[in-house]
Length: 377
Ligand code: COA
Image 1 (cartoon, protein in one colour):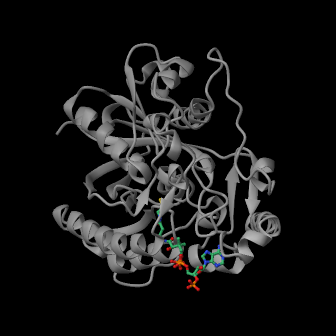
Image 2: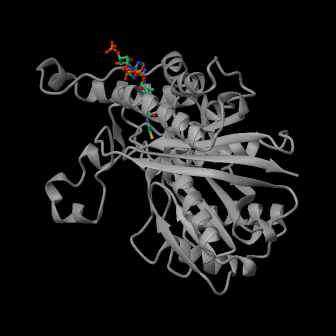
């Protein structure tokens, strides 16, 4: 294959909201909500008609997940025990939508780092878990806001694996010659689909946006990451699900049910996804002729520290240290498709020419994606 058809990652970009919520702040507001609920429903609880709610705890959250805080776009309403969700007012149609806005911020950083002008990008894929509207596609709005001119964009949703699925799609465009320069953008406003009143999951998610510029090697900057191989997998499961959608309005009696937000069977996810992903990585490494000792670093999906510890151990054959499998869970929490890209963005500059690493995602669907990359330059 000539350099014109070899896909590489030229650069990545990251937008991080200004505000963050610590576990202490989150738990104190959640517990205030619980006390309020239990007080207001004291009689019904005593009569067994309403469930008494339990307090959350900082210790549980950190031990169960490794999460210490999360960035959010709308902090105060999330922490208000009477509101407990972000408030992001609708914008008029002549103003950029918030999902596109944060995507553009991440994209501009990736373009700057690669020295690429927006007008030289051929395609933009908005790949994330939650689109803010049905149409026009967020990607097309981003294309316009960046000033890309000719070319095309579309939205794709593979939940937590959207970024790696986007990378393979972009890489295939480069391999086939249908594009030379493709932006994959992952704006994740996870605070909008999280049920902040659900003790089992109220701590899981945060907001962020990442961008990945995938290009043909012959136009890429001297320093880049060659995409050595990609592999995607999906396997249907109801263990992570969100039933929000345009048909909800046709069934008004269920419109406000909790299943219109993120719900999961966390333990089942843990048990089923760890072996699925570890096996998938091993098989893909085998296909590429790679041994575990060839892998310098893992940039794993950031959902749970325990899952990552087990996957890394199965892949590397020993307990991984922070250098081999860096985490951003402590500060960013789970940011869905953006998680492994944040880890890559923040923890890849120190690798040397020839070093090999793996970007890996997994999540709802189930879906999983592996992207082996080698540093050049
Ligand atoms: N504070 C205190 N205790 C809590 C709590 C909270 N916020 N939430 C749950 N608990 C309690 C439960 O009541 C339960 O108590 P019990 O054993 O007395 O019944 C106990 O903690 C264990 O709950 P469980 O839900 O089984 O916890 P866990 O150790 O499995 O951790 C997750 C929960 C969600 C963090 C973990 O299962 C996970 O991360 N799984 C993978 C999720 C994932 O990757 N999802 C992908 C999303 S895209």
